[in-house]
Image (cartoon, rainbow, N blue to C red; front, side, top):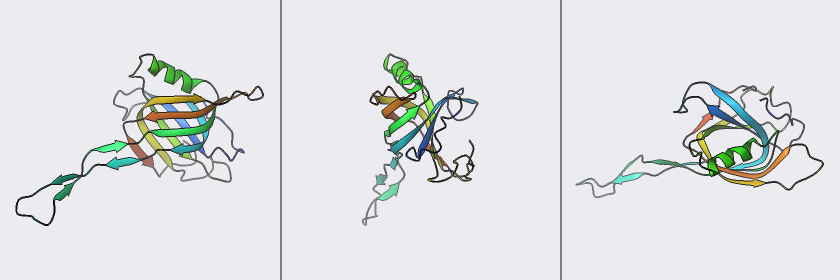
Length: 169
């Protein structure tokens, strides 16, 4: 499915693509785009490492610090539009027992001016094995043809940043 084209609407500064991975590990293999949407707010792209303090005998000035487990925050997408009800269907699948139905998510930061497809070096945050935890529909409007998403929250199992992405993905 092609990305939702809302280019002149500058309020939607983030394009979010959802992919079904054909690889169970989610690390390589072919991916198929399930849906794409535009959102005006994205929070929770965060990783926190819990350091491990090791007390060493004979070293009285303080413990040795080592890298520990990395945890990821819940990502929250707000005020978005989609070309169809795919995000609700994903949430509904998981809520009714398909807990293994995970998607890979990419958040594209779009430029404030110009065509986003022609700007090189677009920053893309990639999240692996996302699982939806909350879905809130937007207010219904008879004049709109798109599906409004007021809020979508999801957790994930991996975060990376693609700085070498071109304008097209």
